[in-house]
Amino acid sequence: MVAPKSSRCPNCGEPTDPIFTPFCSKRCKDVDLNRWLKGAYSIPVVEDDDLPPPDESDERN
Image 1 (cartoon, rainbow, N blue to C red):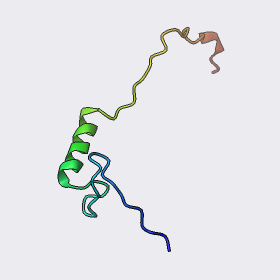
Image 2 (tube, one colour; image 1 turned 90 degrees about the vertical axis):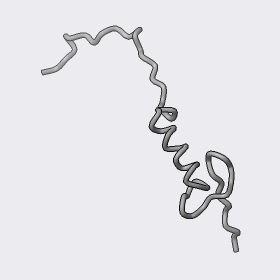
Image 3 (tube, rainbow, N blue to C red; image 1 turned 180 degrees about the vertical axis):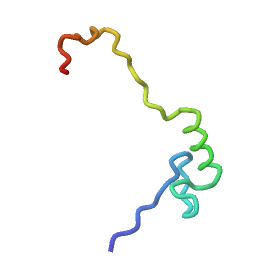
């Protein structure tokens, strides 16, 4: 028989509470929500300004 994997809170590392899974408490759950709302988990975008504009003669009707 395989032992169940112990889950840890992604914010503080404490054992998770089934009510707040994957977090250990309402506080850690709210901290994570606040990070999402502030954009802390956003993916940075790099603009490609070096590309030439598309050639209009290549467009097909």
